[in-house]
Image (cartoon, rainbow, N blue to C red; front, side, top):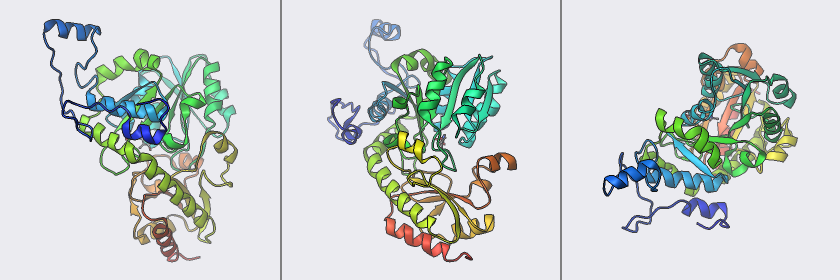
Length: 394
Ligand SMILES: *Cc1c(COP(=O)(O)O)cnc(C)c1O
């Protein structure tokens, strides 16, 4: 792979390891162990004097190809593939902290991410302060002498609020702390947290990277130094490794990832504009629209909108349920980034465990709906939205 290749080319060819059979599609190496020529070779491999794989929990050929292809997309030095997005998040956070440390996190987080920092970390003596991430001053006010980590996602799930990544990175570094960014909603195509100053970026590869609703996966990307000094031992000895079969699915997903995400984003943009003109709709939040409350930050850090839309229907939960149930093409499901268009009612599903107060803080009401655009024809999706909205009272 040449460094000068453009992303789309790297995503088709990056990281490929070809066996003696000359296969065109990358091989799936379903193996736990690796053969050593003799005892001395085994010793040299374990000492790190000889290159090569040792055990699939540490690394394996198909995972290596997927990790290298992700690095090419992200512009990162190193990556580790994990069995799920949550394995990536929990490893990236816990590997670098110890009892007595403090985390500052934006409160608008994917539910399981919020549980890791708010409920799990304190069990091990790691304190966490959750802040409204829309205002940088809130991050600054939360800093303590023992603050070691900042954690955020942007745009957020489900209401597509935005956090100023470069601003938080600067605050984190001034405080001697690191910034971890969950970049699932923006995708690596449209937002580059490492270039904005983040130290670590994580993905749930379950979403746009697989993009076809087949398997779970995750990935942690950073500098070679951070991966080797902070993550490596944690990763090897706690065992979040991804199955080589799933690594293969995700790697093949990367080949079509930009084509899919561009199509999804184009449809989402058109549907967001359509929704904004409808009488049954109280509010549309879409990062590609000029009326997004944080359009200025979006212009600084994202190169396109999103494949997701948040909107609020007049008429609360009853209207939201009636609308979702009336859709033909769009399926009710809580995954996102899939090639099939999906719709979710956060208040009764993904965010049902939050208190009423916490939901209100995040702007999730009975009428709030999250839409994830698939790769169907945009006009078919627009017609599906129109016919479902027509069934609601105006
Ligand atoms: C889905 C998701 C996760 C968790 O990923 P899994 O693959 O489901 O474990 C983390 N963060 C965000 C923003 C997500 O959308």
